[in-house]
Image (cartoon, rainbow, N blue to C red; front, side, top):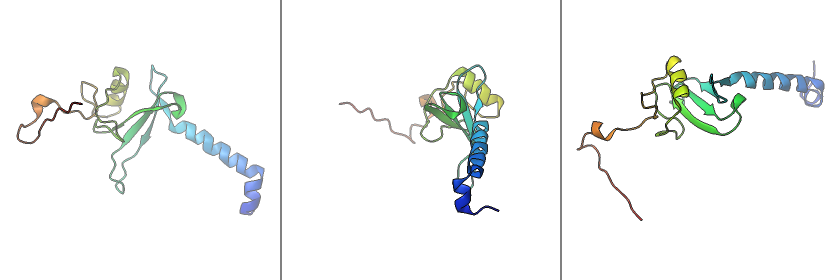
Length: 125
């Protein structure tokens, strides 16, 4: 049995880290027909978050995060109002995500709003 200090100094650490890195790449899946990848996070009742996916510009979670979407089709982590590509929307719909037909995450249609519930302000410079 190794002490923690021996573990940090030896080959055992490298083997464990290699396994973690291999696992990390399995977390990310490619969106078919694209160079984009995503990772799904489960519902978390402690943080009150729904199941959601984080989508990245490159394979294996590399590159810029493009957007994140909740299972109910709303934007997650500031992605509200973003329009996602058709191929992404179709793929996530097949996985059970409730993305609207316009592919826009959590948008409001003006003609669906009740006039007494909202005010519209147009700000200029």
